[in-house]
Image (cartoon, rainbow, N blue to C red):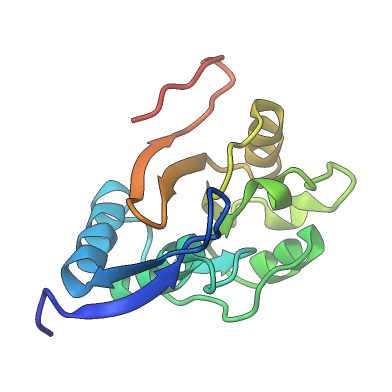
Length: 173
C-alpha cells in the first residue's frame, strides 16, 4: 500500500469541543505498530484479550491491529467483566490483556484469580490515568506487569510507564 494513503478516519470524543476528524495514513499506523512490537515483542503464542472495543482508537491499535500484524491470535469478544477475563484467560495457555482503568479498578481479590496463575504475560491500560492502588492490585492479581500507555487519537502512543511497588512515583518513558 502507498505509505501516504489515508487508511483510517477517526473522530475525537469532543471532550475539548466539537468532535473532529483525524486521518491516519498507512505510514502512521505502521510506525505505531512497529513501535509497539519493538518495545514489547511478547510471545507470539500469547493470545490477546481485551476489555476495550476496537471502536476506540486504543482498542483498534493495541487489541486488534497489533496482534493481527504480529501474527498473534486475539479473542474477538470483549471481556466486559472480570469474570470474563478469568474464564477466557484460563482457556489460553498464555494471554495478554488490553484494558482500561475503569475495568482494572473493578478487579477484586474475591474473584478466582488463581485460575490464571502463570497464564498472563502482561496487561496494558490506556484511555485515562490509572490510580496507583488499582495498578498494584491488578498487576498482583494477574501476576503480570501492567503497562500504562499515554497518548491520544491525534498522537497515538507517546509514553508508557509501569508502576511498581518499589517505585512510588513511576516515571513516564
